[in-house]
Image (cartoon, rainbow, N blue to C red):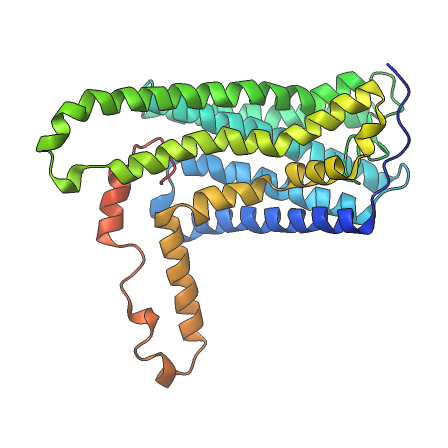
Length: 336
């Protein structure tokens, strides 16, 4: 393998963009956790998995924020600590992302229900927390995590580029799982969507006799769009990290291109924000409740005389119509 390229120096504007991405991702992950805590009736199994993914993304964003803020110039104890936390959280995020796709595949295509899915959740916990923890502990014990001159990161610490077997540890601590996710996620979501399309075709001859209340064109369309967007957004965010990893292995000076550096920084840190956009802001059942909660908070801060006929008197966000619509959404999908 060629010697490492010269250090990638971060300019203040690049650091500011990545720090903003970290903050937005942490905010988005926190919002996903808050919606799970506020509304128990939305706690489906799929959203429970999304909760654990959000926790991993929250830890990842926080550790990356510290690393970019510090902009390490050399090895140090906090560099190793930050590198270990981000390695664990980032790898765990990969596993939980694939776990959600696998759960949707098994619950929708193979109709997995009941005790079987409960056992599956325990397997997801063991694998998605246990494997990243074991890899991270091994990397720390063997002193593989350290200063990387920002060539395979954007200011944070990861695998020490002076380690002889650095390529192996880069693969084990993230890149291997990242590249496997590039293949696994589109495949699983493609199979799920194919199954849903077949089910729609099988029911098409009965649709003319169904009442309007039992038709699901809007919800089916929204679910189909999310099934496409989930792997697409993941790949669009993560691919820049893979590009810089390959360029680093080749010893190419292009690894320091400002555009690649910024895209890598945003891609690695904004996963929590992207999940929030898809599963909070673009999910009507959650968005309606969240906006109603914000309106009520605004009303409560106003004098009583000003809020007598305000929006707080509108019906509660958990409407009967929404509950019925949610119940007609496939169980495996996290609401549309």
